[in-house]
Length: 461
Figure 1: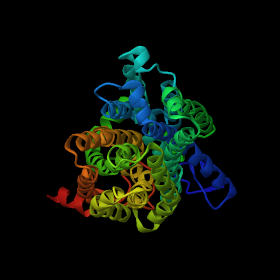
Figure 2 (figure 1 turned 135 degrees about the horizontal axis):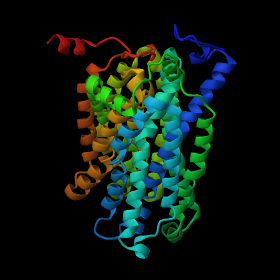
Figure 3 (figure 1 turned 135 degrees about the vertical axis):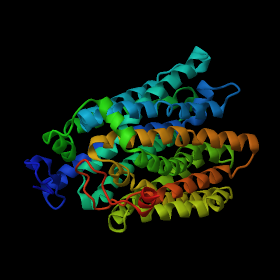
Figure 4 (figure 1 turned 120 degrees about the vertical axis):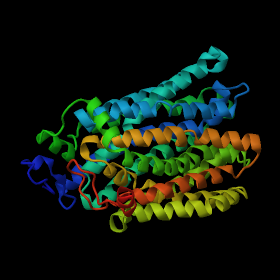
């Protein structure tokens, strides 16, 4: 039924699913569903929050803060992500990926649904934005363990030669959640009056997160933990406490932590600028209506969804690093002209956003294949979760806030493009230190892949 059993494991149960057999394909589909549904739930929240930003501003930040207050509500959810990664990641390396992922998806979906029942500023005064921010903090803490765990779970289930293909569906879930959230808001805007949307319509999409999370919880509870982790357990290589995992990570794996940090700055400044901030940018800076801006984003995201599996599969043949080089260089060169193009009208905005999305996809499609492979099994969850979330909290989650503050105060509408270019330059500095791991096994206690020339030169220096 399965292949790629680790030598010496003594158990067929730790074999990776064989995509050439019906049983293997079924198991891989279940693993994809269990991984991607959490990511979809997380990004459904971001999609709804971004699409309802104008309504949230009126409901919770009607005073001087305005849109910046709403963007602060978005950014503050990232403040607890590093702590979430530091807590959930080592626990996931100690007790397994599945148990942690069951808890994080439940917390994310409950916190999102509760936003829909919050009192407004007109009813509760200052307590309204405080409660909103408190729920965003819970989401951030939970997400600190969700994304790294889901990517690790998928990477450790996928066959070594097709990790890019199967891992890309995790990011398909990312965009699917964002599209679902955005489309839900658009559907309500088309069916309700402006007054109805402002008073109660904006609440409805937040409620849907709860059943979405419960479906994800069910799917995850139907799966065993990953073959790679179970093999480590059977060999008795999961020792010590979660704290031990955390200490080992910081002591022995500082270099991959720093490499991932630089790459995630590039990845998520682009990500949150394009997917989270752009709806606000199109309305406030370019003058589009809420509905027109939402349609622009939806078209671009649907194109990106269609291309993600193709680029994931392509990375299995070409390697991860060529995909990243092409994306970083392309965005660095074309960000400014494409942002200028988006300011020329509705059709040009669609064209500009679609091209930016296509240039970004080679990064997005290969996250699950690239980042988990940067660490060995015993610290993989923690290494991914901590590195990813610290960089995301510092640079990715704050991108909408920074972009909005600069464009509103300085009047430079092309600043988001410049910010993306700086982030991509940082990514290009980190990328030479990334090991190529396409086709490499993720089993064992050593970092997958061979040392890069950049690593060797530093070692010999």
